[in-house]
Length: 401
Image (cartoon, rainbow, N blue to C red; front, side, top):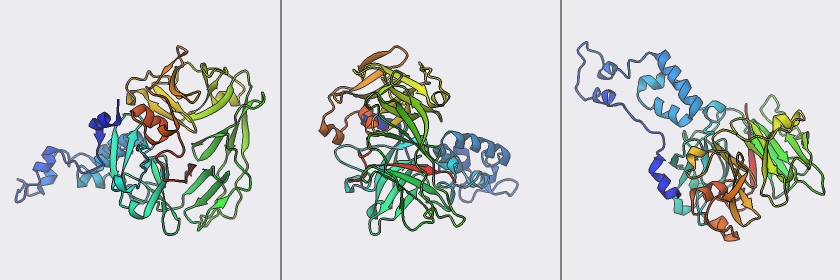
């Protein structure tokens, strides 16, 4: 299914949606029998505050966009729930984690003048789209997205800004962020209280696959000369009482697990699947047989291949993406999507062990500029430079406060 067709399910930016009865009660000049304000007579507005808060908590646990819609119903519902203003970036509960920055095609990137300040997000759980207008784009460009938040760089002084795309709020408080910057093979880090970035005094490895997870950066090395794959963790920097991290050095990568050659061959991929880290790779030189492990099991020395990982499809390349199969029509759950010998997108079904073509067409160098189906667009999310502003290849990691 093409992204154009998927736009039928497009999700508009959160806006006020007033229930019919609540809206009817606001007629100018209307007077309630008991002399109360007309909107107070609405059954929606008269709901008990505790019930509203309970429903709001469930909505926020699922999707922050649903929470914002709930607050938009009426004044009473807004006053009964926690406002995201000032905390939508600092508080992880308000992060739009199920939404990813959706890459455009034909060389367009967020902030490109042809997009007129609009950017698309895709919900990896439902397959819904949101097209949002962000007024900062005239003098900012997008570096990347992490946990659904946008990382922007200001043109005039290269200052980094973190923006919640659904609330348009920035951080009100101290927040720490780390970048794997492939161009200089370093990890850059800073807090919102710092005036400049600090680089690690050790180098990263260009062949490693990186993943940000719960405020840490995980890295998987590649199989070389029969050496085992190794998994490293990069912990966040220490933060001073004044909120700065510039006085401390970043800890070196810490080895947490080793995967023998007979268990995993070639590249290893890390992916966050429902708050669980999975390690994925192949077992043969033809890359036609794949295997999936839980990182937690490998750390304990157990190598138990998974045949199921829920109703999800995993896209793998420079980084990995876990998407609900319900959001990707035509792909069976429990599938892995990856480049097979750099020629076409392969679909490996873990349960049956079968390999097939995931999408028509060969992958050529020019493909990076023009994906033409939903599957190609989602795979492009795994390319660190695709759909981003020119010249950047980074992996961001947001450290919880």
